[in-house]
Structure formats: structure tokens, C-alpha cells
Image (cartoon, rainbow, N blue to C red; front, side, top):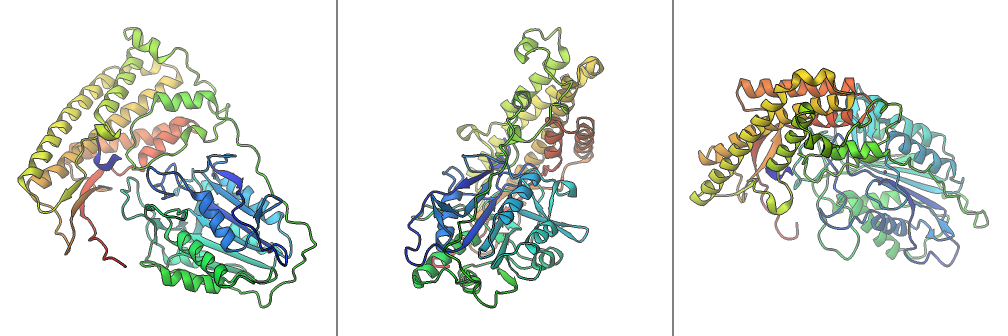
Length: 539
């Protein structure tokens, strides 16, 4: 019931898009596209329309064809690593990213012109820059991929041309961000991304203080990803190829011309180009065999009990569009030793007197799921307001507050039942101790969020909302790190936070650690913000 409560990564062979240059042979070019979307601990990145088909692979193929990268069956030099692809799945974890980079570089030939595109979150910590894998935690550098590692790999790569593109610090203004944001490009991060080794051309898709913009793609005749830069680059590459159909295989990739075209097309962000341009086209040998494709090791088959654990604890998420592939994360049998289920949840519910703590835990989960209806037609939360605020809007808000009050009462009763069986926790096996601790903390967290939502609705009835800029159509409700509630709400949030921290420590390497760490990055507050005025046609 929250306001708008709201790499399957794969290294794949792209389908043949269109015929390669029939005269002069294929161009010696390679392209690696890395797109991470459904983050475990960060806000998701836009990969396409919210309910539409993912078109990352199609869009990557379009870019490859525009850049004259071979994509034929017998010479396919396009590699795509994205958690939104459906075939040959590989989650873009730190290990997979490192192996993809190594495989791409180790199979390149001296005459190749190579481009690597990273569409992902990036952060800087203690003066160092990191790319964030799908399961990376920005507070834990060991889970991140250092940018320095990427540049070390490129430094030792002996090819004709090296280009790397950092499409990071991304933001979709139309998307509600339920987790703490990584923020705009910083001077430190920009400097680290731009400091490529000799012989590498670098594009950073936004400048310090800016964001790399995203949007939900509208219906289009060409595949779009939602990344403003990627889509503009694919169009620029297509246009340049059309304007120069007789480019020779030995030509370098026209990075400067592409940069100029993309920069002119983008609004609201200024890409930066740095690094060395090859002084002269390197020799092209049409007789040399095509560069070999590389394969990543098969993704481990998910442990059956992992899926069962996540299913048992499934609750509606706070983050809009959150589809993090939790059950596919790499867990080990050793970490899960001692957590096996001894009886089914159905058996627990049938024998609640025999299993009082387990029954209270499952009943609390059912209460949360019932109070937090987010399945489209069932959602009755107020998340967007049109200006001016009239009596009809206030009546709708009053109705919403009644529903919130009922949900709060139900969760408070569930909390009382959980606390009442707390003395039986020590006698339970590890699985149910973890279940109980997690659900108890989640109920407290969701009570805080519901109370904050109720306070935000009260601001509508009293018309104590932020002033609107000219032409703004109204307000939308967004998550906030700041709590407006009184001491009891803040104390409950602190108790939930402490419990999540302890849960992550006590059950390290297990699904409960993942769930606890995800809960810790949830923004518990709520505030109204003005909706940006609609853009004028043609701008």
C-alpha cells in the first residue's frame, strides 16, 4: 500500500542484423555491451518500457551494425552482458564482469578496434572509483569492481584502437527511487573514469554535477534501451554509417564524430571525451581468421532451498520496478548448512499450537501481504496529486487514510503476536530463528513507513505542500531518508535497523543476509515533491 510502491545476465551471440560490407571484407571491430538493470541493493536502472519487452540485445545489435562491428553467424563480434536477457543467463556479478572483460580482451587481435560500453551504477569511495555489479554493495568495496582493474586490463591490451564508455550516474526522473541514490557525477569519480591509460579513448556520459538521463521508451520503430546516451549513440552510429557507406575496413572508429553528434542530440547532460586518438589507421589483414568468441562458465544451478526461502519470505517490495533476481544469486551449500526445513509451512499452520512462533511468523507475513496490496487493480494508495487541491482530492485522501489506519492496526496486532512468542525463539532451529528475526524487523519497518505515509497524506488535507513552479501539474509522493514522525516512530525504525544489521551478521552468506541488507537501504520517510512541468514540443 505504499505510494507508487511500488548479467538472467547473459553473454550472447547477437542475431544477424543485416549484411556486412560485401566489398573489402568485414571490419576488424568488436563490441562488448554491459547493461545492469535489476540491482539487489541499489535502485534499478531503466532497460525499457515498464511493462514492455526488453530490447537490450536488439539495441546493442543496432549499435554494432552502426559501428560496423561484424554480427554474422560465422563472424559475430558483438557480446552482450545484461541481467535482462533471456538466453544463456549469467548474472553480472563481480566475478562474471571480471571474466567477461578478461575473455573479451584475451581473444582480441592486434588489428581489432574494440569498444566496451558500461551501463551501470558507479561510485567513488575513499578516492577510488568502482563499477557496481548487480549484487554489489556500495558500502563494501570487496563486492565492487575497481575501475582501476578495467584500465589495467585495457593497458595490457594490444589492439589497434581501444574505446571505453562509462554510462553511469544514471537517473530516470519519472521513476520513484525507493532506495538511497548514488547521486550525480562527482569530481573525484569523473577524474577517475577519465584517467585512462595511454592509447585508450574514454567517454564519460555526463559531467560533474550532472546525471546520465534515462526515460521509459515510447513506441518506436527502432529498439530503445531507456538510456539517453546509448540510444543517441546508436542513432549517431547509424547516421554516420549511412553518410559514409564506403568506409574502409582499416579505418578507425570515428569516436570524435560520434561524440560530437551525440553531444548535440542530448539535452540535460554533457558527455566528455578524453584519451588518445590513434594517429593512423592500423594495418588490416583480411586473411587473418576472425577473432574467437569467448564463453563464460555456465551459471550454477540455483539451490532449490534458496528459492523456497525467498518464496516463504516474499513480501511486496518498496522499490518501483524491483525485479532483482534474488533466487539466482550465488549461495553455497556450506553457507546453508543447518538451515534445512524440518516441516512444511502448511504443516506449521495446521498445527499452530505446536509451532506458535512459526505460526505467528507466517501469520505476520500474511498480514503484510494483505495490507500492502500492490498488484495493479488492488492498489489504492494516493501517490500523485493534481493541482489545485480541491474537496474531491481531500475526500480521496481521507478514504486512503482510513485504509492506512486499518493496515496499521493489523500490523500492530501482528507485532504484538510476534513479540508475545519471542521467548520461544531460542528453542527453534536456525531457519526459523532467522525467519522470525527478519519478519519481526520487517513488520516494524513497515509500520514506520505506513505512519510516514499517513503523515504525508495529512499534509494534503491541510494543504501544507511545497510550492509549485510555473506550469507544474501537481505533486508526487516519493521516499525520503528523513522521518517526520515522533520519537516512538524513530525508536521503532532504529530497532528495525539494528535487527537487520544483526541478522546480516548472524546469517552471513545466506538469503537472510541479502534480505536484511536490502531492508537497510530502504528509505522509510515520505515527502511530496512538485512534478516537473511538461516539456514543450520539440525540446
